[in-house]
Image (cartoon, rainbow, N blue to C red):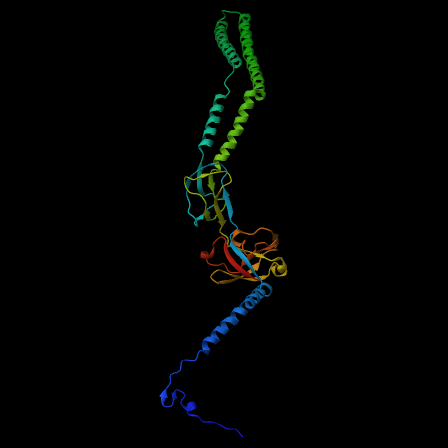
Length: 344
């Protein structure tokens, strides 16, 4: 038989012998919260480990960059940036001037060589002058003899001189004419001998050496006007007007007008998921998603872009995967080197 006691305390627990008794609020809720916090702290490493296991072994996510495959424009000569004619982000045309570089040293070298070539310019030799003087004298004599021949002809026509005298003066004209022709022939042969001697002589060799050096310097100076090699966009400008640059310094970064591509770096164990034609999901930093297609066979690389060094630090090799976006994103997403995630 069950015995039940019905006490007044049970009916009115806040009263004792007619006096009101105030009890504090129950404190078991605080202990319960603290217990849950301790439990969460204990289980959190397991949850994190499970997340990374799921991300590494179930999800296949590769860090990647968005790139337009830009071309680096470098300096061909030491000099000073004289003028910059385009702004970063602007579109430029093929052969449009991006900037100009000047070099006083190069200008001085070109000026000096031109002066040296002028000083070595070939002038008529003394032998040539003698030949020309002799020819001129013979031509004057020929003219005088022809004048006499004309007067003899007039006298012959009047019967004042015989045919023998006229034949004599005619022979003198022919002889003088032959002398002039022979002198021209001798003069041409002398010029040929002089030219041959000059071609093989030290002066001509020096002229050729100076001309060759001048051509190279002129080419170097023309390369100091930096022009766009194709139609495209100026992504980056690494110099300012007045800055001194040296050979090989990077001046600008130029990309063509084609849509950007995605370059992903995948762990080699996931090779089967990166075959040409495979579909992927590209997630931008603002969580906007685009579908893409692996465009070509992967290649093995050992060096990553600086934007992605941290996630792969210590990794011996990676698969470089080129991806074409199925839908071209807005131009405000065309940021060179923008880091994205690729889900295979």
